[in-house]
Length: 626
Image 1 (cartoon, helix red, strand yellow):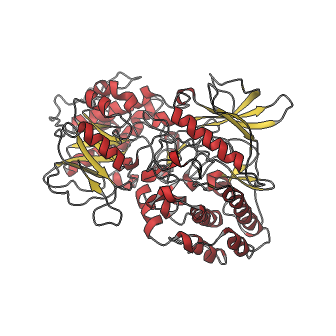
Image 2 (image 1 turned 60 degrees about the horizontal axis):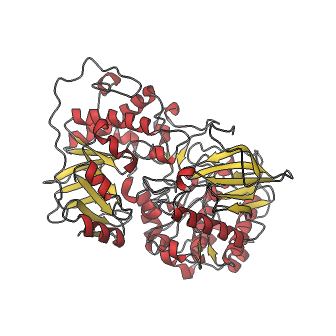
Image 3 (image 1 turned 135 degrees about the vertical axis):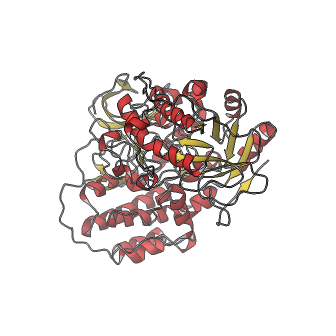
């Protein structure tokens, strides 16, 4: 990939000759030493270099990789986490990720599957023997080198000497490849968690499908915790081996030594292949839902809820095998980003639904959609704009409320405001907010969008929010924003027809995760289209998270805020001031609830939900208030 404006030319004595990829937390370069040695250099974005907790997380990643030495990992050769721009150089390994390999060439069979399986067992053996648990073993973190697989990206690994930063109450990982205990008890994960992830990864490698693959991150997490894996397409003997690896009880899973013996029974004959496995170094593609991974995460990312519906669907702009510095994934959160806190994705923010099913408004035309529009690059307005719009009524302030975007149920006694997925009907007798994904395509549904409306990298590959497996929509031009809005506005009309009083467009903060492509001005221009249409329908519209754009809320036309974890991250004050206390807060941890209740219980509307935002009477449901 050609250098971009502002790219560094050198760091730590390494000439940075080519940009291999980038993500929300940093950039990966191909570097050369004075002797000509090639390395992959991760350089942290300047804005995150001032975050001491991020530096600490980065130091831990470096320490974890240095501790692991084996044929199936990519070792650190140099690093400086204390530099003005923290960086780390690892051995450069040409090759595609497993995600890209399966997506491009199809599932692995015969000898190739056997080599992959046994190589990954050896990699885990080397990782575990030094007391490290990887915690994010997935197709995009496995590099298919010519001499065998490499496990990469230790940004969210857990070691016995770094518990202070890994027991913050957040789930860490990528939902389709996480273990049940990563959802239920993230503080207590052991090496058995990686064995569970390996089972999911091998099923994907052998079939191209994931054993846990719900229609939303919430459902995927629920399947991991409570449902049997989908293994019908897996042939023996791998099926029986995978069943044992995917046991819900960690103690019932095979130890690595036993697993190695079991995997030796896999067929050894190599299957006919198309393109070579290793491929030419570059930015792998992700048609459909697989691609390179290398997540850019951070300790504040949110895997807790369910972050990455990733794996086959995680694609990012980084180079195979050389991930940008990782921290926590987020809910889910699965790694990339966030509002004020780098990489901090919020957990309850996504419900993915069928785009085709959602577009139910008959007769919606471009002319209709353009009514009353304005845009940063297009100041024209339709001459057919209505003379007067219905009155818009924001939600009442400082009331009991409930966040039900993961599944609707009867609101608890005293609740006056409820937020639900636009798939669900509003709750009777309360103020209802309609939640939908606005800036990204639902997981595995990018095919419902015109191909040119999906954001693409310099090689023409679709850019994904890897923590959710969602293709990012291309809002970079006025024309594309209007075409995308024409689809999203159908959901707004659907919400109005159902009787909702307000809408909550999610992923306003997508631009913060993809700064190489998107800007804040583009996000604001697109949101303004949605707010004008919502107001024309008599609906109030919420700003979801995105503290960076709070100063612009009035000009964009946003009426109130729905904020995840402002108590956890000490952001409530800024939202309260900007929205005149019309802020609905959802926390996911006891610490966050305690903090926000202590400071804002007499001012803001506050609820704590379980990290999967489950419906009532479902195992794992949690709801608390001040």
